[in-house]
Length: 264
Image (tube, rainbow, N blue to C red; front, side):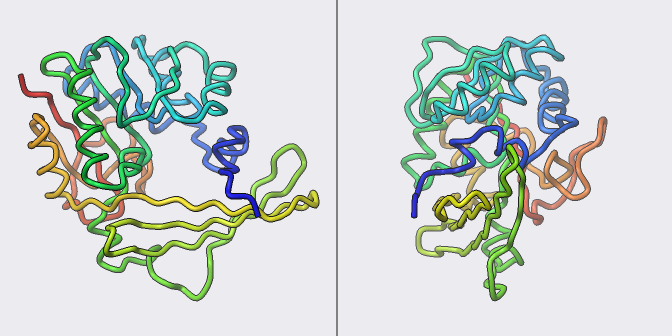
């Protein structure tokens, strides 16, 4: 069994598995940027296939740089979603030699900072790349929801199963989630099978589980002022965000949305 990440290595398959035809994530980001009067220069950390970065560049006339650790994702972004400046870089130690008006980090990319040192390093890098008063905007899973034993993090007697077809091949994923309480991680094992005769492929990954007040603490310690911290609505909430919908909620559901300003 291979441990390669099938979705990261196959960006077309990723976009089929996680479609966003209406670009809700990018549109939510743009409305958040406008609500807080952010300037035009945006850094998209963990930009993936480039869908959101390209939308912000084309439809919102923003100057966007996107960074990611996957060369395959960045190659796809340059060819399929051109416009931004895409760079191969790690969120914990990137150094782009310039500043931005906003750093955005969507779809739980922030939670790949698995320990306190990683998270501190990312926040430090972000602050160094922000102009005075610049914004950090993140959308992520809510640790408070998962650590209370929510459905999705409990043993339900078997993995969840999803199927996606790409280039005529049917790929089926069997995904198991469990909470590693000592490490404060939501761990995931995803086993892929396909009908083209390829052997099964297994992918392991994990997200850091952060409580809302814990996230506030890290941001404050890193030199940020938290302007907004809420659970809904957002691009991946149920129901999803719609144009003009105000932030609200008790930060108790499965997603968190945070806006923080760099203090001078």
